[in-house]
Length: 209
Image (cartoon, rainbow, N blue to C red):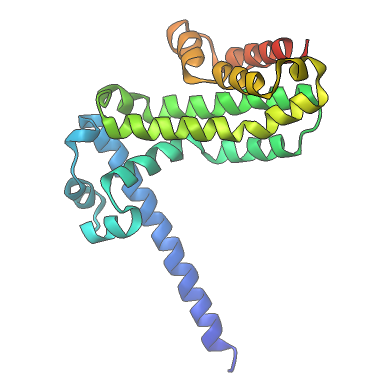
């Protein structure tokens, strides 16, 4: 009998956390649909709350603002479960060629996710200053995340060492960015597999030879 109250509390806490996660995902799904249909700037917190079946205070408690909801929508598209899996591989990789192949995979996963999840939303929200600010922030995060891989290359690869850390980081950031993906995949019709293969080969040739 002595263990039951604690077990009950743990069960209740777990259940509340699960329900909160489901509610959060429902809000993000609804927000993405509204942002895609009408553009970020035209959607209100009240509309998101109404369509998601929650109160406006609940939105504030979870996200603080509409910008917070938008940021969560974009982050979910970028840093999805597949990204987390590959990022773990990147942390463990030591062979420089493998590091660069994984870097290409990470770029493909991020940009495929962006295309599939928020590509249409970006199209109808092209003038949104909030969206531009969030994307700029995430670009800075992407640049920072690549630093450890760049340092590994400079340490172990003579060609990268000659370029120096700053140039290696710039090259990684440029080749793995949205513009290259847009031109090859979205405009020229390359498949994601072709893009990833080309990117890995290009990074290896540029930074290891």
